[in-house]
Length: 274
Image (cartoon, rainbow, N blue to C red; front, side, top):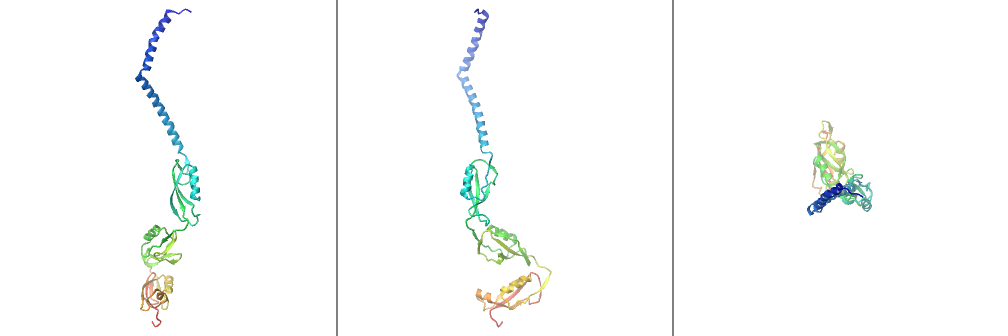
């Protein structure tokens, strides 16, 4: 094989360039720069992959419906979905099973990330009792706020003619007057009797003489009238006496024309002579 001089010259000319490139690559500073550059690219893309995986990991986990389950059952279901739970409150709902979950937050189907706390409200095992407050004499709005703060509900109010418009005249539970401090089930409905204001319509005062206070109250309710002042004589000294006492005088007298919602004062005794 014959090698020309031009080929020999080319080989001699290219060798120095390759040598310089090798020296540059092998140079300490340049080598470190290349390593750092490659390491930066690796970290950048690695971070993107990790973030994409993490975001996707907790992105689409719908909250299961655990209402109606016990706490143990609900806990197992939520744990299986990689979620945690926390008891937030207990209520008493007569239509629900005792000890069962009645509310949950977030609601079923809401999408959350893994390890999210699901707050549960369970139905109490036994009904809770509260003490009845006194709301007689205050406005309907105040009474409603007071009752609801005690965990009681307010039914549709009943209106009777009275000068105290929209003020509570009576507080009733299951159709009967309830006194302050009486214990009733939480969530019970309280009925309020409110004044509707005085009417121009007039009605003759009923004859209350000879009636007990209970009988007179029923009569006044039918006539849309109210008790005014009750005056007891010396013979009435106990609660038992007041139940037996009868009315021997009233003001205004029977058949006096009164506006609806007006009041009648009565005098009572347990003596028959009066």
